[in-house]
Length: 277
Image (tube, rainbow, N blue to C red):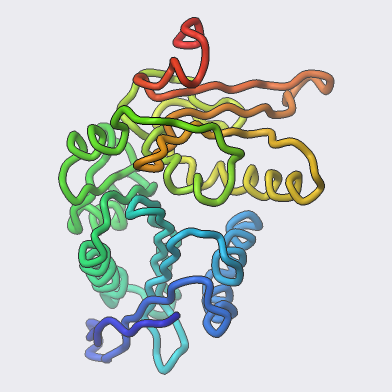
């Protein structure tokens, strides 16, 4: 579904249309995929899935376009107002016209109007995009980190409410866990080795690392194979509060890596006390 948002005037004086495509949308899918065709295979696969199939996620591609021909994009993937922000791209011939800054402002206003809670992104520290995000309310998660977060209230309030005590369930990893795994892995919690099989060490987003795993999990499910990744989910907030998975060992062909990581308050549900180490 496409929704027009505002008319934007570029630095050149040209007026263009800002709008948002909420996936899935078969009418806009090919145009958005073409605009983002420079992305790597996992990203292109992910874009195709969220633009063409029902994933259960809230999918938004914010665009600047000329009569339906998009030239700038910012994407958010959310679940219950918590999500990731990525695919910030403007065609080379349209850069230095203020497109990203103005589209970002439209996105953030729309996010707040929708009652969004938190967004997470990754970029280069102290780069021009970093300062665009800072101007729109994002902050670095650590000094000199390119990972950034935005909260409609505050990080303290978000963490308190999102990771509140409550009933939990273990679920095979699927699309709904993609955006909401980020607050756990990127959060200010103990633990350095958070996901060896994902390549997640310290406070790092799962935005990119999770896509190949999701593809593998969906293929295994379609083939009737047992899941290789499980999420511990707080059932009221739908926060991912724990994670377990196995991966092929990169050096020893007959061995595998097993990861187990949990929020500090949920280790009793996620594993034995010795796992806290």
